[in-house]
Image 1 (cartoon, rainbow, N blue to C red):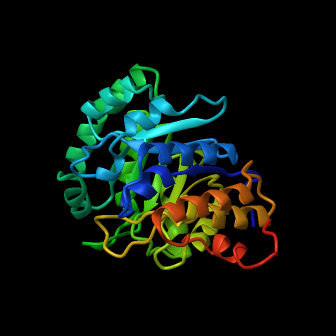
Image 2: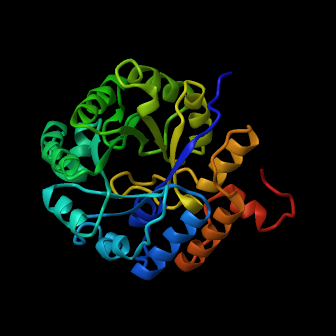
Image 3: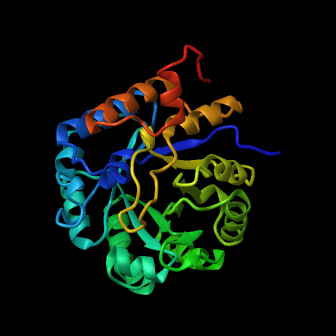
Length: 304
């Protein structure tokens, strides 16, 4: 079994997590959450999105969040940008990295952003071009890479087509999303093998939700192929408004426990992340979804 020596953890809780929570979190609390995550050693943090607050009210105030964050050497704050208007707002707020997103499922694309896959990619091309011209980094997401809540199983080749288009736009990294969290290790591995035929493995990231409790197993199967970037959300925040019943992203602290237990370096303090998970969960009025956070609340046994 070949595993990476180091994994870069991309924290998506402040955006992909909070945007799917029923409780809207004030700007000052979001800023505190992000600062605490950076204090814990997370160097890639998705802090918000410049989408219409009419559609995603939880992300209102992203410009204020981004402007309030103090610059930190070695820490990248990214924001999701759906169109040129969003790019203008991101640039005005001082963004240095953006993300664009497509889907491997036609039905999901139409339900999520009200256009076909092809139309969405045509829309994102000038966004990526404008961002790159302004000196920003651009990351690409592909949703529903394994299953779609409307169409069922998605062929790996469908995800590959979108990944290639995003790569051609200049995205430095392509994050593959099991949006509904129904993947299994064999299927996840087959997906990455297919994508890696045309996209360098060092430019592939994994973004797996944990609806059926398979996220860590799926991640391990893909790490064995050489992938070394994983998206996660503190406390297992989130879900998906267009995939009924989908759970949040794999919890950051659960991911760290697995990686550290296998001797894989992350540069992140898991104890500090657990404290952050407890704090944001208290604000949301519930327990963390993370197994590690729940276990550490009742046991003295230390995690790796």
